[in-house]
Image 1: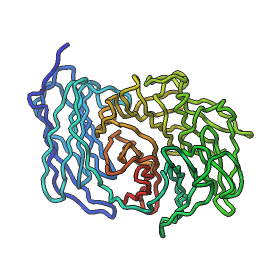
Image 2: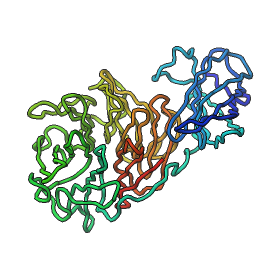
Image 3: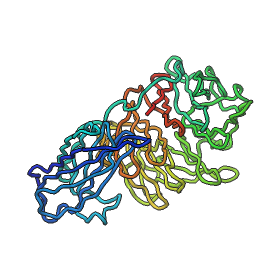
Image 4: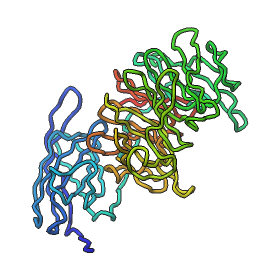
Length: 443
């Protein structure tokens, strides 16, 4: 096998000029690429410029054997920008999401200032020898506290108006002592207990504080109802007084899902999709009465991409639909050896499970393009249709759907366990479990 070392194999991005729009400043880039290309190694270079809120990709056809080539990118983000690059043996028109690059670039983060010139050098390595140079930037969003003094918030759900619901697990002497659903008016702050108890556990249905929960995990809001993952059961809470709690899917003895960690509502029939890290499956809960059907995973732990019921999950944590299709993303986290833990972002289509981002790397958090990115412990996700925001250990990461770029937008949390988004303000609400608080990330 011939290993090619670039003479410089560098990409110098020169940012120049900018225009102002109603949403953000944009920059233009002239790319000077200096590289030594073997005859069959590189036919296409894909560059991605990733800012805090968007990523801009562009493909460049490369004639093998060139030593220099000038490239141009327009409308790139300004501010802190991560530049990434992959090189492919195939022609650009043939490059698909699943195409394996022949070369990877070490990602580089620089400040792109309108009206000035920024220089970026990307060093490419043959596939199998890539490294990632570092994280995007901590706290690109402004992080403030909405409410503190909670027990241990596990998940959050936004109703599309001004109410944020919180699944709060209270501990005493190192053990769970209470489980409660709280609501927060995001315009006025202050948390109000709506159901459950901070001093008692159980499974009783009923109105408001007479109800009991056993192990709160994910929650989601849809059409006036809060859907609640409680142990291996699905509970509901009406979001108007008296906040009645019911159990439409008791799942006796955990005969279906062994545990429900996250829950999403999708489709005209309000089908429920849940992640099950105990049985390594994703389930669809549907019908009347509700019945659980395994839709992805073969029930064994692993990272194998394959047809739906042949694929493996490490331990599916979160599920999110980024558009109206039936395709969804799963935040997958676990270990292959019981010692080294890591996370992956998996895509589930109508036919197969594919790994879109992440790599086994002992819990390291690094930004990068698709498989060059590392997730230590992704737990919850929310999407605006352009990006997927991921609560990952002590940080919030942004996955750009179009390009596969992963950047860190906040990194000062103490256990990010839940995340929700306000479409009007674009704010993100994060359940900071260790901090016993709800944080607000404002762009």
